Image 1 (cartoon, rainbow, N blue to C red):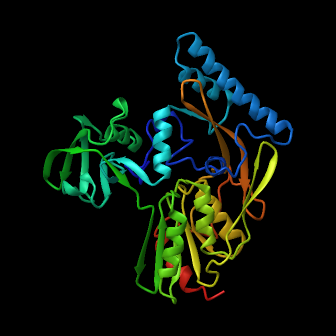
Image 2 (cartoon, helix red, strand yellow; image 1 turned 180 degrees about the vertical axis):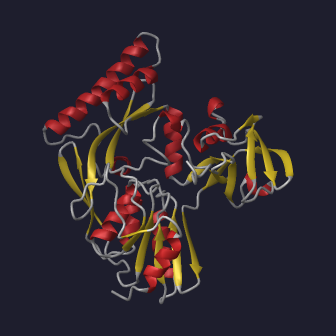
Image 3 (spheres, rainbow, N blue to C red; image 1 turned 90 degrees about the vertical axis):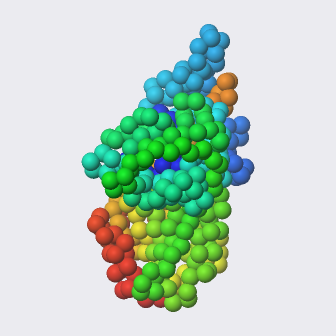
Length: 387
């Protein structure tokens, strides 16, 4: 779990990894814009459709029966999803689903910390969100987080630390207090922060030595596609670009397509199937097709980020450097249950422009680089000329 961002993990992620940051699926993004078939839309008949519909009905029926018996509809739905064998299927409370939607809008409730678990089990702060409660309190990168509300967190998975920081047990809103125990060198101290609603900076750009602009995308939240296009336009004309997608666990696919469009002049980004129907995602015309481009990926590059990587690789637009990506290429459909909770079940999969399936396979980089991957990407970039 090292390298995970503390502020951006969904509540109760231990239920499953279907949504590591946000929904990371084609259908969720499309359903939000009305561009993809929703639960009430008619599709062509077929085995895929009937199987999907049957699974959704089974989950809904289990929830309804539990509610009629005075039991927890959510727990019944979770059992039904588990029995379905759907690796990415999951059930979320109404409140959790609302939080995911907020995350897709680039907002979150927390204290503004990024952190990772070191090999010795200690939790180290790696970055502090500017203007956040953590920044105001003077917490900085390199500090050790030792406890949250009196509970020692050494050796804990980062996701469990997230649960404490966000106050999952009480659905703590912005304004509620959380007490942190910290260490910096030989100094140990405690302080109390108040959670706040913060906005994410999912796209950042920086210029490094050698005429290289690094554009990092942490996730595909609302507006990230435009932010990538802006970063490309603002980069010096002579600069090559490294598109850093390491640790990007997905997001809105509409934004992923928009980000890919910054480097393509129209054309196919991906295809996907939903309930037996084949659909296609296309880039907008007018992107920068001449700058040297390297896409930097790792095992934490997932879903929508893999979609972008596959498109740039298949179309010869970027050299991909790093390690094999995660392999999350499935499409989920959300449906509302009787108590307001939401069940998500897999309904299809997407493929790269050349027809490669991503789910369970991931994307193999053109150049493997686990250690000093950024430096390797820089070296590759220097060898690329204008296309």
